[in-house]
Image (cartoon, rainbow, N blue to C red; front, side, top):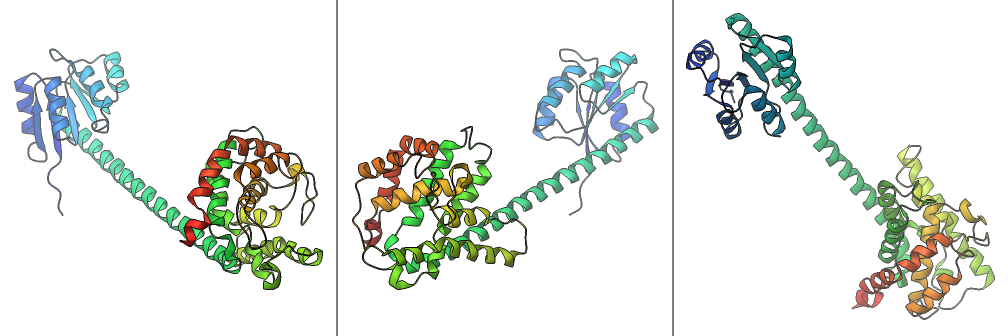
Length: 365
């Protein structure tokens, strides 16, 4: 669509000047006039012009104050202002430019200079507007693509996790509950001196997305062991423990398909491999101790054990919330990172609310 003439607002309290400038510009531009600063602001706000020619010496509100108010207004600040005045001292020019004007023309008016300056600043404004629109488009496109990638990541994780869930359907809403538990723990600890370097908003989001993959390795455990209705014998338990290695290896193979050094699955690997490690080094599969255990795995350990305690399994009954609290508390410094246990105790009512909101009984109904 062809654009109409560009609009220039001329602000001056002298009728002869207004008539002169209007006559000079009317063939190439649409000209609007204002006889004082207040009228200029009103006209500009009603329909912002492409450029403003502004006198300095006007009654009530001079040109400097008018320019200052124009630049204070978000919707008017980008309009180029050219001072057109009889004031010819250097300090007058400096004051005008300091207020945000793009140029300063001294009367009497030279038509060639006026035309040239107007054309230059309108061209510059068009370039700035184009870049602004382009940047806005690019920002929107980047945000859209980022959201699309995040959705693909989440769908990929959920799809992989569903494989494990179909093999062990007694867990019901276990994946959803543990995601919420880890979210609460991470939010509580993100200012903690030992965790703030890691628990950024971005890392927390990716960490929570990764939680459903903590038991992905169970797809490799035989049904006779995975779904056994009573406690496992020592030999069977050794086989069950390999689900941590199987899970890590499955995620590594998935990463290889992405052909990238570090992927969105980096926390999933740590959780799958190390969420059964213990603070005192007595866990598995690698016997890691204390700070050697990755933070995602330490958070997952508390969430996973709490949920296992309060959930019914084919080989055990569910424990009351108060009994689970007691066991977690006693595991501080032995099974669990003490700082994470402290956070858990602060959040224990929230944990109970989550367990009730996503209970297996509700799902079964």
